[in-house]
Image 1 (cartoon, rainbow, N blue to C red):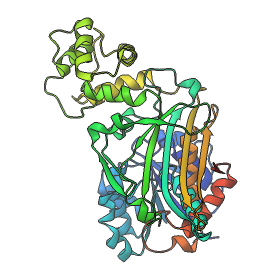
Image 2: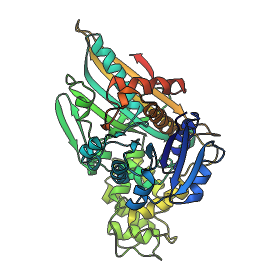
Image 3: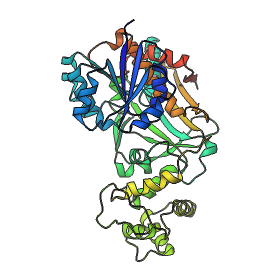
Image 4: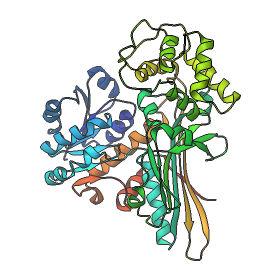
Length: 449
């Protein structure tokens, strides 16, 4: 029996379902690496043929010394470390798997990856990941029947279940709020009726619109990153509209826009931001109010935010009061900047509590034109609730998909054996992953509207 040695970098929430799936094959031995050894040890508790080690992924020497000892390394650390992981994997001729988009820094390493004869498989989580598996399935089906995909929309949200969303942001954080909030401040591009539309980071939340997915939910949607290349990635040159975006509950985008307008999403270091300041004093400084009295702050906030009406103004100001940024309590300043200071507060207020459920909602919508001129709208929808006593929906959908893709790679699946940077944009890669994901109980429901 040929044993396979797997190194998992990172011990966040998606790592456990990934590792658990890989332990099902007795040939696999899995090492989980984290900077804090006790965290890695807790993750592998009661899992067979696993071990934990301490590893600092910011140290290229540490990466080099470890990665060369393994058949595959799964990088579940923040995306900015993937390029360094790949560099070490090139030296050690070790296969790499990530759940992240292929970044420009990773793309620059493609030739070195090919020369090393290794595979770097990416985008095998939820979004990106499961979204690709079903987009490619429907597009291939349509093309096989002689149809054309004239418009493609895809929206995904990782949210609290409705019963757990009763807070001003209508959101909860299962990990640090920083990445989630910054993702709502990115620029975006998409295709609409044959023309490219570019949205600046400052405008992103203001272009959010109500979006119906299924009964019982009130979502808003906004574009996410750059959708334009997906016309090529998904092989739909005939598409005039291609838009991939994010879902939030109604009211969240306007609240995040207000936080941005008021300076709370600024990650730049401020020399004036010091321990001992109250939240109200910080807010006074960022919006140029004459004093830190709540009434003065609210008057100035209304000027800065230019709310659409009294109801929106009342709702958001009540939310700011609930978060505590108008209070005379002393703030805990983090890293000398507004964003991290706010995130510390949100971690205390908006973390999932025991027994609370999250929700993954993912929907594709295809406008299809058939040979006879008839037009249909097709949808694929995933509505997945987390298990209050087990994995969250996000952890399961990302971690399980990653584990399945890794196992297929280890098993020598022919579609995954071409050296270079790979992502699931082709039927040959998508189908085998999707079929196993479905057997594990995660399946998008397809309909013709």
